[in-house]
Length: 167
Image 1: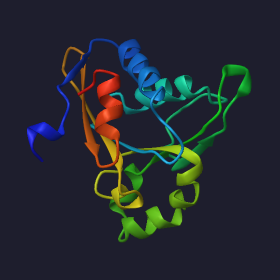
Image 2: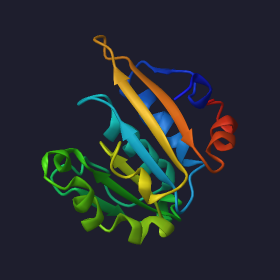
Image 3: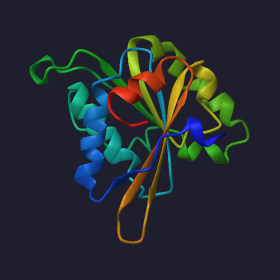
């Protein structure tokens, strides 16, 4: 990967900033988008997903799908929602003999065209679901400051991120 393929690091001093970034990002998301969230435990992947869910106006609370692997959040018209969000977590799949087979078993490709699909811990596992996708790398410093880096992979991701001043 070259530096020109990534955004400048975006500093996120508090969880509310990570949530707000997710809300902002939701404005450029559309059905069929695949977003891969990468970072260590506690980096803020779920908080970013919560912000995206809020921005999309999905029904119900967005929580970590670690133990259920994937959740579908339907749009809530009362919150202005018009697009479903699939929130998956591949963390537990890394230790199985065939993680790609496990990903296939989730049938994420069945909902991909109709929803925004977010996958935590999906790096190296889900990119093949879509020719174009967005990778977001999140890291956390000792002082709890998060840093997010956006990596557009094909399609019009770079143009969409530029509209949000993220590239």
